[in-house]
Image (cartoon, rainbow, N blue to C red; front, top):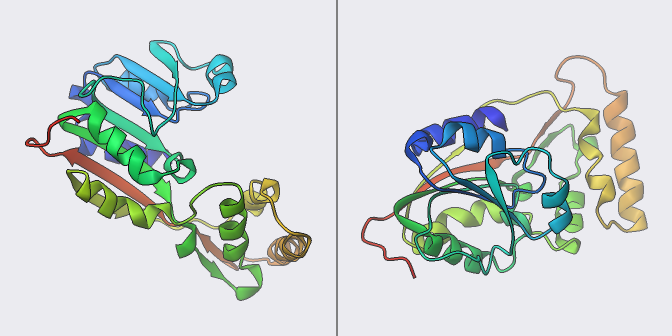
Length: 229
């Protein structure tokens, strides 16, 4: 994710952003980058307290427990909100977008990197796992199609939106199923997953298989005329 993240942050002028919110920061993996590249201060927010408490990379940043749909900040408090692999877990998504717009000042920026599992590309068909991902994520409370929904929601919330996709494909790693194995799958689905893993590991030769998860890479600017709600 780092190259795409770097490009998006550069697009929105991270070096001149004075107050930054890392929304859904988790253990703070991206916090050092935001502290280093912005003009600070940086706030890392997550609804899971133990992730904030156990994170090792919050030097130079404030930690806050809170929820994306009711952000504990004043209107116009930030001029950059960063989010990565978080909005797919937020319900209702439209409320979170409204909150992001509220806490951003006019001309503030949102940088979002979110997946769209409904658009997975897999070949050969014997390694296809898209339906497993979609069903497992839905049962876990996530929205596997969050990526395709973001541009319209952001536009309606008063943002100028630029969206790109990863432009490089990599050979898939057999370890890509590790997270899928932790999702709530039925017995039949888990048997399917085992078959897919077995076939994938048996394939040999460069580019003998393709597995690509599309990511929406969003750089959105809150319009100057929009007032913080």
